[in-house]
Amino acid sequence: MDDFPDANEFVTAPHDAFFKEIFSNPEHAAGFFKKHLPAEIAARIDFQTLNLMPGSFVKPDLKQTHSDLLYSVMVAGRELMLYLLFEHQSTVEEVMRLRLFGYTHGICDRHYQLHGLPLPPVFSIVIHQGPDRWTPSKSFEDQFDLPEDLRKDFLPYLPKFDHFLLDLSKYDPATGEDDPSQMAVLQLMKMARDNQVLEFFRWLARSAAAQIGEALFAKLVYYAVHANCPLDLEELLQNLSAIPELQKRTMSLAEKLRSEGKSEGRSEGVKLGEVKGRIRLMEELLGLPPRSDSSFSIESMDEMETVYRKLRRDYEAMARGK
Image 1 (cartoon, one colour):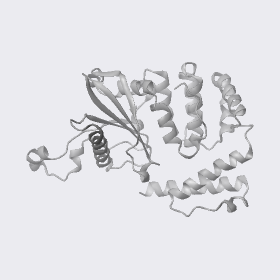
Image 2 (cartoon, rainbow, N blue to C red):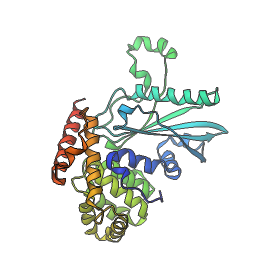
Image 3 (cartoon, rainbow, N blue to C red):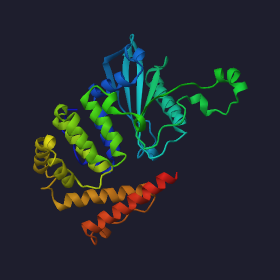
Image 4 (tube, rainbow, N blue to C red):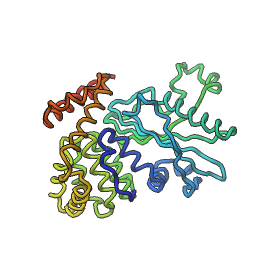
């Protein structure tokens, strides 16, 4: 997590960008798997062999609410696949186990096409960010309509697997995590959902700021401002500079952004492009026809921000109604 991030990647898909910025790093992913897989499984894994695999198994229509990464790792000289799925929609869906079944099939089929049989085991780990607690079973077999008196005879002939789950709605990273970086990442993922961005940074100042590197701090800021925050980047930085424990690194980040033309010194044209991108994303998610470039030219920046906020409210209302 040492690379300084590109803020533009966080504009249109902040959840996906943050998840992949953090968990694409094998060192951070290894720490996460060691903590959140059962100890008896983690102890058998050679995490020195952890390797990020290319590609995604999430369908295009779900990419705004789901992000995924696939890792390969060795266990006793054999390959194991660890599939990490980040679920960041506002509601819990019973169909998640069916989707995981499809993703697992896709992983196995790709392996078969490339390497043939036998297949590696595939473990699925779901990180749930939504505000509601995860209530569905983690067992795929529970998706079948089977009365109790038939289960014993029928289940041996039906697909069976359980997935692992980290439900952030009922998990406290401050007490559950040992690594300060992982603690900060999961705490922000949890608090951003409830629009508690400033509260998160006050917590960070009290708890782990001294142990967070500059690059990770920048990623936390970028995700915070784009995930669910009423402040723009400059306003958030101004708020953070007033927190003594964060003042030095906030000033350093602001200077870095200014030097790259992405904060106070960035041109109105770049800001305009960001707002256009956000508006067009919301229109796409809502199934609306995209507006022409000429229509943007007759609106001020404030008017365009108003349009974006309305579209976002409409999208969130639509998502809650699903």
